[in-house]
Amino acid sequence: MSSTVPQVDFFVYPQTIHVQPMSAAQIEQAAQVISANLQGLSVATSFNVNLRLLEQYNLRFSEKQVKRIDENFQSYSLGTHFRLNVPLQKSPRRLRYLIRKFFSGDVSGDIGEALFAYYLVDVMNLQSSCIGHTRPAKRRGSLTPDFVVWDRNFYLASVLQKRTYALPLLAEVKAFTGQIDPIRVGHGLAQLKMVISNSSLIGILFLVIRNEPRQGYDTFLVRVER
Amino acid sequence: MEYDFVSVIRAINEVNENIWLGDLKKAVEIADSNLKVVKIETAEPERADAKLSRILKQKRKEAKQKDVKNRRLWVAEQLSKTAEKIEIDMVENLFWVLYSSLSDLREAIAYLVESSSQTTMETFADRSAEDEPQLQTADRYRYIVQRLPDRWETRAILNDVPSQWDVARLRSALSDYGLSVAEISKGRYSKVFELYSRDMYAQVLSQDNQVEILVYTPETPDAKQRVYKIVEVVLRVLSQ
Image (cartoon, rainbow over all chains, first blue to last red; front, side):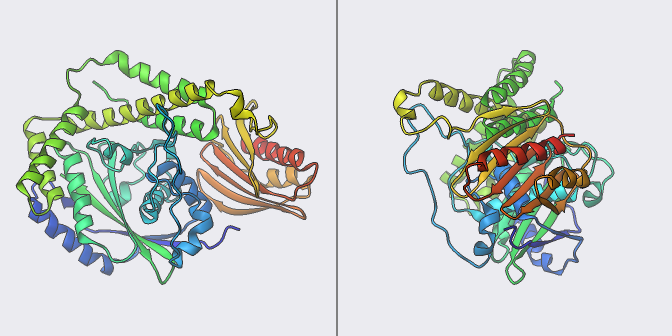
């Protein structure tokens, strides 16, 4: 019943990207350099993902309404396309669906966000109650990253290569099913540039790429500062 | 002003957990107590989040009008310049974004509470009271058991995050019911284990203080009682 346990390889991009002085063209260029250099990195750590737990993080920390990733993971890995199951009726007048999620077929996006939460809690030992999922606020026009992380015990110090840092940490998550798209990497950098400008906050660009032959995932952390 | 980030993040997560459990009363209590604390302290002419959201909208519009090549990157460049010039506090912006999310959640629960108070007799015509999952409250946890077509699904919230995990104690408690325990995954705050017997299989997931138990067992007259019994035993051990 627990089905397969996908393995995730985690990589850290060695350079810190300083976005404040960068123009739009320079961000575009930096995104291309990052995308081209990801393949040559050596694995920082690997972890096995329990799909039941992944589903729990999916329910809590993903923007879209995609359910039961655990039960459908194998079919998804084999390329099955599921029908989008949206509510047949609009919500009654003055009422809304309680769930504040969009009904979408963006499975990879959900897996990306859920994997980021999985990494923070089950690999880096952060408490899930200190993770704020702010992605949905982007839809109402707010300027925000996908996640704000209150890492008060500095559990991420080793990957961020700093002993202490200003809180909260701000994270953008981008997930890919095929090749890494430098344009979307650039969008992630641009978003972080906006949210950390005029502050000493640190940004994390978390890239999630499906590793098709292994039916697993590769994840990359890119440090971003002013 | 000091922005109590962590309290708002925790409050949003707690409200969501209680919605997941179906305990709307508790969700409202948590949202209200956190929203109240912040409201007292602030009276800003235009909050940083509103200001930034207005600038963002304006820059996006400009990018469209100018038909720039990569709009998102151009907008980011322009917005950062403006934010620096007018010295907008990004921490303040993020705090208010989170605060608004909590406030929106509170509003959504209010709609639901209102709608459920307006349900008519017809709504219940084809539902028996027995099918309605009821929230159960014990000293150290709250839970709800729902009968689904293929399984019994339990959602529970423990009052505290379990500090110690004793699989031996669980094995001993469940052996009386003929159930074996297999530990599947164990982290600092997460545990996944499975329970097996001749006619029952269950998956238990515990993450922080949230617990989900899925029980698969044949339809028998005493299935419901057995499921509740097993759920109680698991929750009692987890909450110790």
